[in-house]
Length: 136
Image 1 (cartoon, one colour):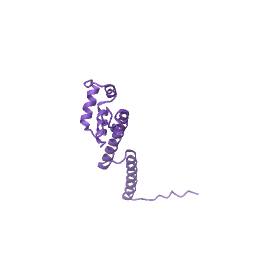
Image 2 (image 1 turned 60 degrees about the vertical axis):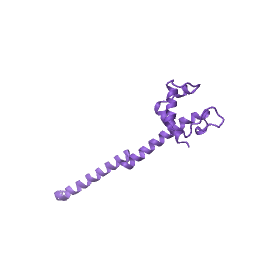
Image 3 (image 1 turned 90 degrees about the vertical axis):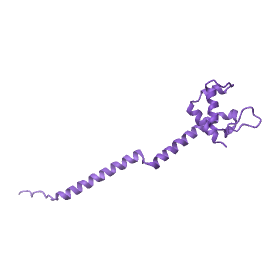
Image 4 (image 1 turned 180 degrees about the horizontal axis):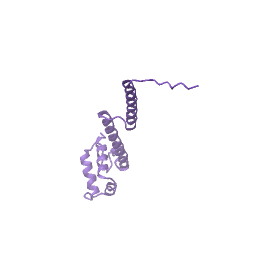
């Protein structure tokens, strides 16, 4: 006895194109979703969030670096009233940057400040000065 011929479902070319197109679209959506999940969303909101996070990290770093000043200049840059060492809290950042750069470059004499200032980059000095200026 002879085997019957296999059944073949005849699909129109239009229907076949529809199904293939649907699967291609689903694959593209899945690929795009995976790419977005890896890189995060983009756009103004994402860029703003990244900028805020970066600024927050820089301010936290400046705060940590400024903490080393507390031994002489008092907590948060508020020296005791009878201290010979000046307080730093609330002073203009431009003034503090100028003082620190002068210590760093040897243009201003001091006991320990020239050595301390040499340990910071200009960017770090700017961050520390900005942090103290914000302490009202």
